Image (cartoon, rainbow, N blue to C red; front, side, top):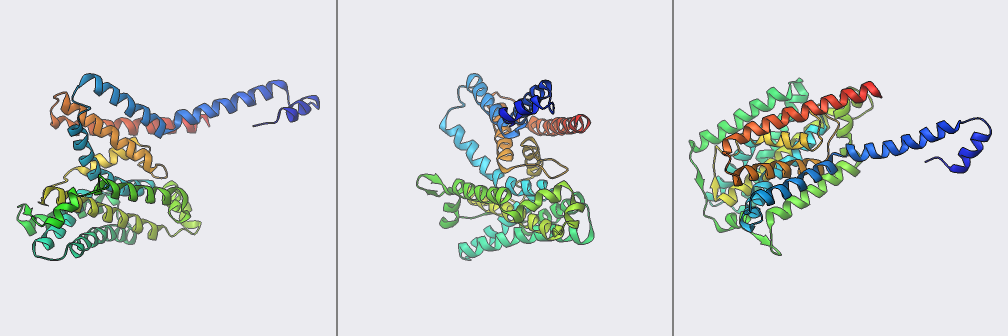
Length: 346
């Protein structure tokens, strides 16, 4: 902000006109308000608050504890892989195999538990399955220059195919007490799944915001060629991002199967669309270089409130995919229009 004394001296010396000083102060105030209006997280927070108030008025059952528990259980299932999807979108790519990797990793863990393998080894095998799937995605995309859409779509079919072939399409039931407690256990009265989510979210959010190594993802997403020329190992960072995505998908799959007391090979179909919509609503760009963990989480909360509201109001659940697709198109159009407007008037 300019100093008043400096401005007055400059005016006396004829360097700056009074109108210029006035316009400069006006521009600074205007820029300040523009930053507030452009803060996607703040806008989403008020939107979520508006929906909470609206649902409270329209549906008296909204504030019931059972309703909030239902929202919380479903939220964890999608919040964990959403963190990985945010990583990918910030770097300029995405993953369509998330749901299939969740199903496969959950099946591997459940199958080993049924065979009597210790729980920690079974969970480690499930994590390695998800991490390996992510590694294959990232490695082939970077090594052969394959489009992420094609590669991850192929992995989606492969992972789902393995899960279906291994189970013959049947649910693998697990009655092991330790495995069940993994999904329903609590620490200090809080679900273990919620604690795991908070730890992972804050750790990776800190990495994206403060750790120089992971902040390279923003540069890669903003301009991959420039990032490569500046010395950033783009291929390595992209593989790491996909491995993180695979590991997080595996964690979600394992916890979900523990809560359901078994592995369902047809589970999690279509979860990728919801994750991408939530991240884009939260400020991630499909072109990369933009986004935050907080924004993505708020976007997912908004979608959960929307879905929950449709259920409480008696609207058919089959309309949910229509709403998700419509929101994705709408947000992309708004982002594209605002970007073009900023370029024209900058």
